[in-house]
Length: 151
Image 1 (tube, rainbow, N blue to C red):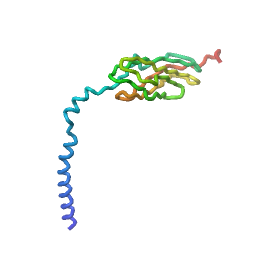
Image 2 (tube, rainbow, N blue to C red):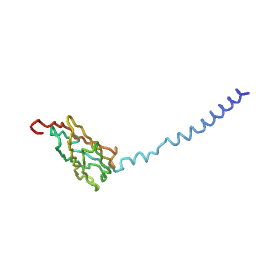
Image 3 (cartoon, one colour):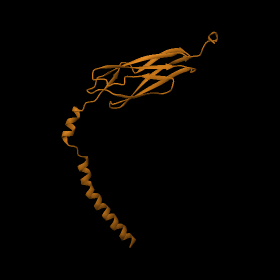
Image 4 (tube, rainbow, N blue to C red):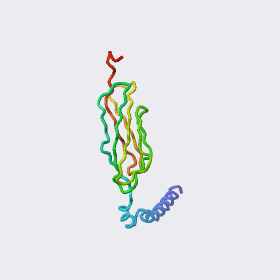
């Protein structure tokens, strides 16, 4: 009796799966007009003159700044939604207003070495309305220990 019940349940399961197959195919099909309109979508595109800045060597308790220059070469205004540095030793200033297509902008990143020493590699992550929405800038270099006569 149990075996017959299992066969009956499997039979109904197979029948119900077969009916849904056509519905799934209908959901997957995309109208050709939707594909043709992809070219009309307007999106911004941010391009940096330089995405990595190597400050070389600096001493402890010194700061270094760099202007990351960019241009919106896309077909829509660029919005920089947020900018986040990898640590508190790095601060970024960025334009809060929209950057129109074809216009330029600057993101100023300042690194304060504090009591750090050795090789440093800090990142600044931008979140924009571009696709993909994130872009990473890098500021790196070496922080030197003070010499004995500098103490």
